[in-house]
Image 1 (cartoon, helix red, strand yellow):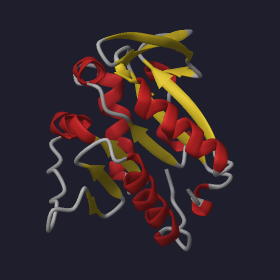
Image 2 (cartoon, helix red, strand yellow):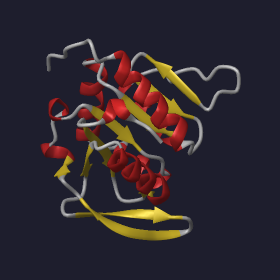
Image 3 (tube, helix red, strand yellow):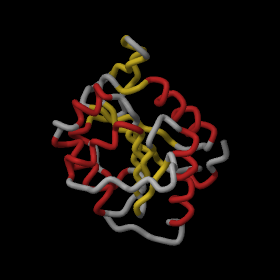
Length: 170
């Protein structure tokens, strides 16, 4: 998967314990291939736990806690799927603050599957899926209807291409 527009960018993946491990690992691999810097922010300090299928998966190191994270330090926000972690993030004031900052500054955001519910906490309408598409876009906000990681990341790559001529103040 060629994601050249993400090369050299600092990508933040926002999670809480219970995020979908399969999605997370595929995003992690894609960012490594694209030579992007992926940083994990979570409610938990130190390690956060993934959910794999019907039980707990592996633990992953956290680069920063939500309470100390600033959107201005990153180029892109990704929120993977996983009902358990979205339920936790939805009650987290710092997750709300970070998501609002990305959206307010028109910075690229990619949200997977049921994680779209996170938009409700910041009163943002869900982008509309057209003609059976698995991905949708509203400005720099991209969402996937399923766990179609490839389509979601390609849409994010397009968003990055569209924004190459813009400068952002934060």
